[in-house]
Length: 65
Image (tube, rainbow, N blue to C red; front, side, top):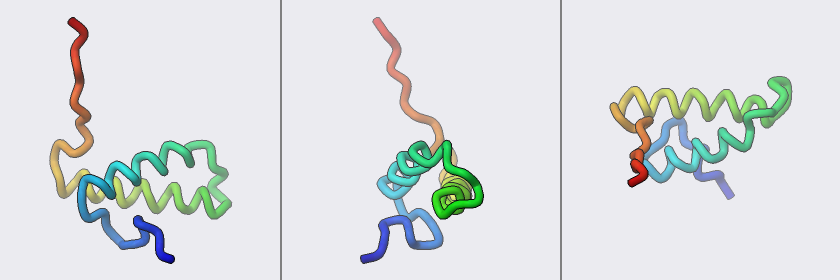
């Protein structure tokens, strides 16, 4: 079964959020491993998505009252 992020681009906000979550889990991956290569792939997909969707990287901030 294919992975949700196997496409060469992120198609919507759900894919974008899933990519961010996976990227966070892979932060400590050694670059010379499959996990490190996946990290690089996700970083490129996220960068492309953010470039095509201005403001996608801006999370809503709730202010304490």
